[in-house]
Length: 284
Image 1: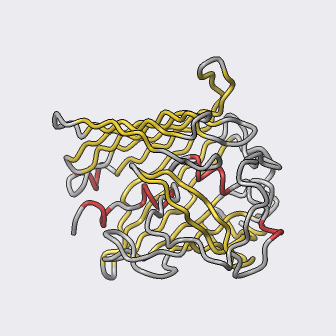
Image 2: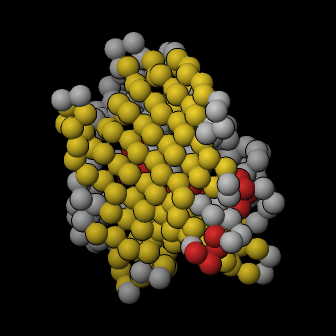
């Protein structure tokens, strides 16, 4: 089993579903692609979330590691920004098998969540990789810099980037601004995402509301399913499911996905600094 199949939780949690199929006519389209303003934010500076990751190896579920999200205020080029940080760390007991020390950062405009800068530093099982994005919103371009940490680097200009495109990490926060009450089960919600050197037109399918039991308690949730196509990590079809809290926070409490080999889950372990009370929690 290769490294991608073992610890795909990094891309899962951050919605890096780069294999999602293209948009079709059943998608609920937005009125104006140039208007990226968001009606509400479900988070605030100071919020932190921790997820525990499990990998299914046959009959066994193995605790593989944890993923941490932090959001804080920042200043970039004399502009006020949200600075989001995601770190993925494998447990010491798992390091002997596959050591992970990954980090992503993004700087977003608070009023629109448009990214201005994105960093991704990957260290997995002896494999190292660094990528940065510098967004130019006037020309709708991204300067992408890549360092394989083996002496090879590459710089590329990605052109014709849609104004509302997000990156891997900002997509996590963008999804939490969606008002799912505007959609009915089966609706597909479009999202444009920059991944590596490519911009993808993607969507997630809204599945409706249901209660979901976790170790933190039982929550009223909103359920979504990204539609995947076959690739190195994911199996073809709607093999990924995400449960957001059905309250003003819209925090994913559970993410699970079938992989090409095995299955993986991410469970919300702890949270702090949330903007609103967890009114979706119905029992401990």
